Length: 323
Image 1 (tube, rainbow, N blue to C red):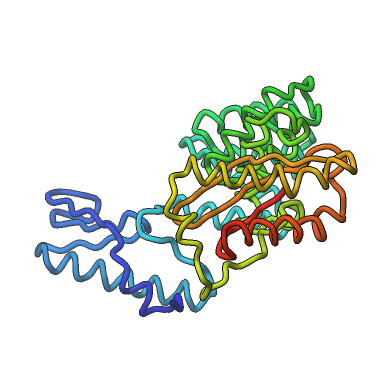
Image 2: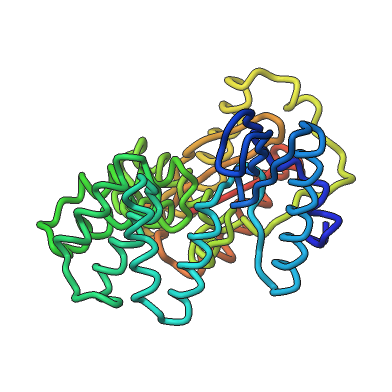
């Protein structure tokens, strides 16, 4: 939907109404919580009507100026944050820093994370890894995904701290829970280094799939099959689909053992079944081992061979992802 006057006018912005003596006199005071917009009248209904009129005028002015407006409930902090971001993008780091510094005082965790980033990069302030980490630590208390991601990077790459891969993974995991795409990709790379650790590979696979599904370019390259759509009109293997998941897994593992693994083992490679989902759609998650890992042929010709085999054993309406 186009975000024009009609769109914003249809939104139900929250407001509060106070009665009695207040800053605008002895009357009803209506205050829209997302804006510094107030109206007062001795009549309750008139106070609300006036406040809405002022709101519409404010929206018109903002739209004419090409400025974005908050969604209901985002509050005044939204506009301050937008102002800081605009200043930051224009490299007016002093203005951005001042706004975020004030916002941090009222427990705005994203402002804290942004201050940490400015100290990390030395933008508008002298580069200071200790202060960067302090701000990230403070924002992390509110489980800010950006702060957790940057703390993970610091521990992974020894920026201002001793290398600690376990702490890096912990902070990456916290960011991934908030759907942080970069964190998902980086955690996947760490976990997939040891392809003998099945639980680690499974978690890494989930992270890589999340990153690829969110549009991460490198994750999409790593995860073969992410660009394949399920065919719509196909003849389904009703016998296979009617079986229990345990029986279905037996069929899948038998196909891997008889038709796939012998070919890969000849060249020093292998493949493991990471996971199998049978609802709402059939989905196979496989991971290469040995010489197959990182092989360009594996991501094309080998994938086609595996997909063709599995589609013959099951049917063509099965998702196949391979790392």
